[in-house]
Length: 70
Image (cartoon, rainbow, N blue to C red):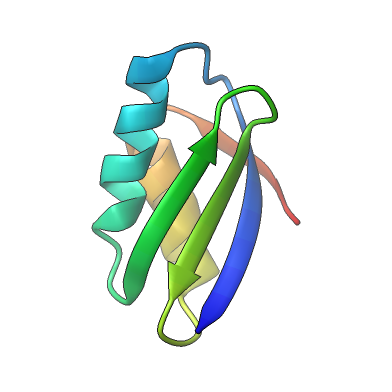
């Protein structure tokens, strides 16, 4: 299993968290998504390497911006 963490900017509420979890969860290979509203951290679990650009695009589709992979 692979775990990658991203810092996302612009989330302010529970709806934001749900939107990011839903979009990122649809990326091929993703098996789990945890979003921490307080820190802006999005932790992505997968069976193997996942295309980072696909994660960034999914966050953007949700209306937010990845400012840094951790």
